Image 1 (cartoon, rainbow, N blue to C red):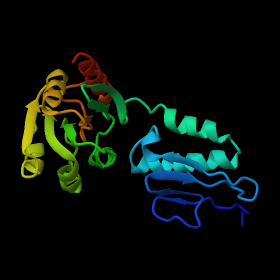
Image 2 (tube, rainbow, N blue to C red; image 1 turned 180 degrees about the vertical axis):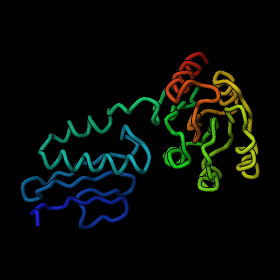
Image 3 (cartoon, rainbow, N blue to C red; image 1 turned 135 degrees about the vertical axis):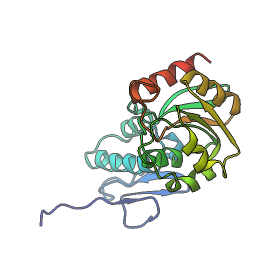
Amino acid sequence: SSGATPATFSIQETTGVMAHVDNNQVIINPPDASRDKHLLTMTIQELALQGKHNLYNSMAAGIATRILEVRKDIIRECLSDFQNIEHRLELVNEVYGISFINDSKATNVNSTWYALESMSKPVVWIAGGVDKGNDYSQIKDMVKDKVKAIICLGKDNKKLHEAFGDVIEHMVDADNMRDAVYAAYKMGEKGDAVLLSPACASFDLFEDYEDRGRQFKESVRNL
């Protein structure tokens, strides 16, 4: 035995764990309740990184820093101000109440599932590119639940239309980023999110996923 004491966390259980979620609040207990009875609490919306997977990451980071006796105000500031990596669920801008999110790094269905799962607003989804044998049935229920319109960005968008045409009424084709972003902007309304999470490689229209992400950001700024 290493003698290590596990520090557990859960988004469902509330007892026997060091961090949990209750009524939209992240609650991180002190490592030694006898010395420090003060809980660290934050709303989920205050966390810089959104989505269930990032909620787990934030809770783990919060536990580690509490064990190291970092001050609560510093932990709270770090969890709310953390700068995400470029092209990974990166909030680019908000234009007339529409959020534009760059997740160009999502080059497969699994990554896009996590992106869609993290969305709390109706989504205009920009998807497509070089398909790597995608099985879109894996995200069809998520798309039906979260997405209001799809902008198909690629040279060949047939597979996207076949996969989602029966659950998404509004689907538009685009062959360049400027047109894709403008179409998404016109289809969105205040309170929506435009999400670039292609689920595909980028090599049909772009140099790489970074070029695709940069063009997305430039097009958003030019709206």
